[in-house]
Length: 271
Length: 180
Image 1: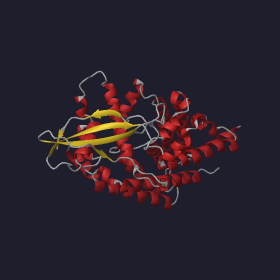
Image 2: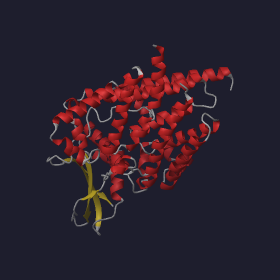
Image 3: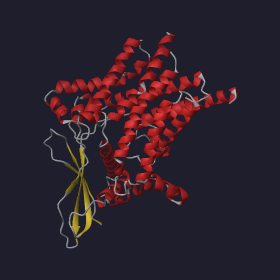
């Protein structure tokens, strides 16, 4: 299995999610306004004295103002499109990926409230790309990067599953209904559909616990069986996007699936 | 780049990624002292917490309300800041409103953690200089006055229990009155 198409597919899937999330930030740029929840005037208090004083303080004040952040998110959008357009594995692509990675790291300085697991997965993938998908990359380095992304993805599902397994609310089958009943992460129709159906609530909770906990098997099972986990993941993230509004998780986690597929292919070839 | 330099780079990256993976595994137990120590250095949030909605699933919607007080101690009605997005089918693809909601949810969680840490203290004024308190105060105080003579403003945080619950909302925090 050739590795370059795997990198390209991951980048394409991740880019869709990052484009959406960057444009969403541009639309909601007022959250960074002086009267917004993420105003730099307040957020800078988290950081040390050095980040607030001197030339660095002045630069950050301008960068984390509405206009500065609009420019930063716009730059990210442009660089993502260009990274997809230029030849794969070239120095130019590496440069654009570096800019996207840099912009993601820079915004974490002000978005420590409000960022989520999809932002973290996107950052992990992009840093890995920047370190491993270099113009001078060896096959070993390229494989290392793909394996790291696959392992992080499997780890994320497995840890989420184990954390649910030790939770009485998840084991008791009430967690999904409780979450779907909130305005923040639920929907009235989903809550109503589950309301008087404890068996369905239990089924949903345990299907999530089992599928997440056992997800690392996707690395070692023969291909048709491993595919079951990836199909489950696809449906899981799709439903989370529809019911919970977690649209960015869909793209960030789906982007790791080509890496899991590659790792599975390499591992099962050994036996 | 020479071949030996490339191999050296490859080895360095291999070790770096292994350490990153090991740190990710070891930092999944939030309350552990080592986790807290490592996370204190993770300023760019590079070590994820993959426990999504577990072990305690978020079962509450948070509400932020504020009211104004005039010089003569006349207090106005509570006004709720609208922080919940109305989702529709397109939201599974395009959902910018989720950002405000997540920010407030994170800020309130941070504030609750601080409240729990100071559970033994009857005087909660230590919260006034914390980042989550100031974040909410700033956002609330920059909103328009609802009484022309308003001199100070107070905010309240509450948590409700979802669509199908008959339970009353929980009170979380009542701030001091702050001059406008």
